[in-house]
Structures are given as structure tokens and as C-alpha cells.
Image (cartoon, rainbow, N blue to C red; front, side, top):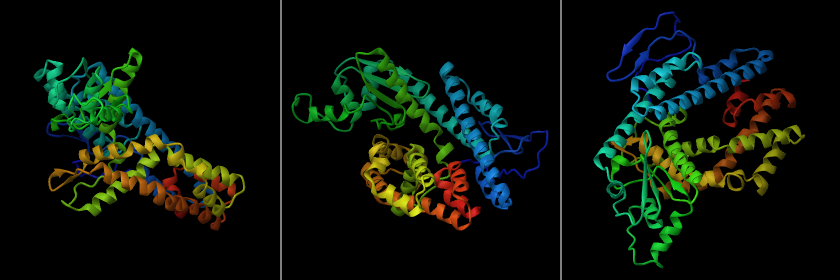
Length: 413
């Protein structure tokens, strides 16, 4: 969500000179660019203007440009990740320069550049907090108590990453208390709620985006339980850190979904936002791709749109969310809770949503709403058939596009 309201479109006049303006305590903002950016939304709408005989080729070109840009954004994120691990104190200006150096090659839009800048601001804020608490609490047990409110029972290892603080807990109670820090469990009740808490926490080897006793450390502290395998311990630390790095750059994908602000108490708006985010999650974890491949395979096999819908919506074999992506779907509520808290404000305060509320909407979406979405996607085939496209042409067109774009493409062509 950029602060700069200057709109940047491919129609802007391109010159060899860069017109720059210094932001207060920030990077140089490009008001004009020396290249033509690729804006997926503008380019998709432009497909409508081409004659039918050109549209198939134009769609394929659009797909290639879109994939190239998405890969480019991933490459930039990887370069930034490598830079902060090589030098965690690298300056904000040096990091934004990496983005600037790659912007023309991947034809980034002004909005995409600004999203990177916002992500790097969040990185800098978190890095400063990590360094602050490293100095404030040189003793690991004191830092653990500041984070989770309990005195550690066993050995702790602390790892300071560029924007995270990671605890490796050797004692099961320390891991359990950190996992559910706000639930006090008496040490003496070994066979009572204490064991239940340990069992609940031990369904995973590590956890990220954990809430902490100190609000300033939320989304910064990660934990894992010690294992008698050095490689697995290292993998757990890297895995949990990656979750936090992903959160930094989520606006590259989510920025259009988050409103600038909500009215305090507007539950309807919050629920609508959650539904949009769940819809996006279904796409990002791979469910949509699996459905798309099956729809097109059945279409190629000779089935009608009606038969395809009946097959995929009724057969347990094609219940992709429950059968093949259950672990990913189960992780959605906690992930979205943190994303909303980080990116949405109401009445000047971060919006807090209960996990149960998100869980209920996730269940409803994948049991009911997803079937409605499936029908709309498959109906796109019927629309193209009515426009006299052959089955082979339809398969070529739709295979090159994500499910979420099928309806728009069918209407435009």
C-alpha cells in the first residue's frame, strides 16, 4: 500500500532521464521510468481490443510476461534474503537499491516497487527490535521470560536471525509454555492439563508468528523443540524463519485485498475480507492448479462442462482441500490472523480476529463456497463454446491462465 499517490501506467512518456524525488528517510521514488512496465491488470483488459485470430497468441504472450514477472519478483526476494543473511545490518537504502537495479529487467510497476519498499521498512523495523532485545537481555533465560512469562525449566538455545529471534527448547514444558504462553500450567500436575498441553504443542516441531507476552516481539519470535538430530534442528530454525520472511513480502500478493482501513466494529467488512483472503489462499497453496488440471483433463477426455462439474463436485476422489491439501488448509486460520493484524486497522488500531471465527469461514468456504466457485469456472467453458471456440482452442486458452482469470478471459474473448 504505497504512500505515493502518483499513478504509473504504460502510457506514461518514457525518457532516458529518471526524474527522482527523495522521500523522507526513504528510497528514491521513480515518478517516470526508463522502461515500459508490465501491469497484469492493464494488459489483461487490453486483450479485448485484438481481433479473434490474434487473441490466442496474445494470451500466450500475456502468460509468458506474467510468469517472467512473477519469477522476477521471487528472484528479487531471494536476492534480498541472501543480502540480509550475509550482512544483517545492511542499510535500508542498500536494500532498496537492489530493487531499483532489478526493476527494469522484470518490468516492475510503480506499485510493485513501492510494495518492496514497504516490505523493507518492515524488515528494518523488525531488525532493529531484534538488536534491541539482544542487548537488553544478554541472558537467554531472561529473554525467554520476557517473551513468554515463565522461567525456563531446561536448556535453551537462542538464535538471532536478521529479523527473528528463535528459541530451541530442550525441555518439553518450555516448548509447550512458549507455544501457549498465555495458559499457565502448574508443573506438579504431570498427568493432568500439563501433559495435555505438551501433547497439543508437540503436534509440530516448531512454530512461527507466535503471540508473546511482549507485544513488540510478536511476529518476531519463533520456536522449535530440540531433536537429537542436528540437521533437523537447523531445518526447523530455517523453516520458521522463512515463515516470517514470507510475511514481510506478502503484500506483493495480498496488497490489493487489504483495505486502507475499516470502521471500528464493522464485522461484516472483516468477514468479507477474510473470505477474500481464504479465496486467495486456495489459489496460493495449489488447490486451484490441481482443480484446473483435472477440469482440462476431463474436457480433453470428451466430457461436457456439466459432466465435469458433476464429477469433480460429487466424487470424494476430487475433494482436493480435504484429500490432498488438508495440512495447508488447516494452517490458514493462524496465518490469516497474523496477516490481518499486520495489515488492517480499524479506529486507528490493528484488527484482531479470533482463530475460531476464521476457522468457521474456512470450513464454510471449502465445503460450500468452493463448489460455487467451481461451477463459475466450469461455466467459462460453456461461454467459450457458445462463442464457437473449438474444444482444442478452449483447452489451449484456459491452460495458460489461472482459474481465477477464466471468467474474465471468457467474457473478453
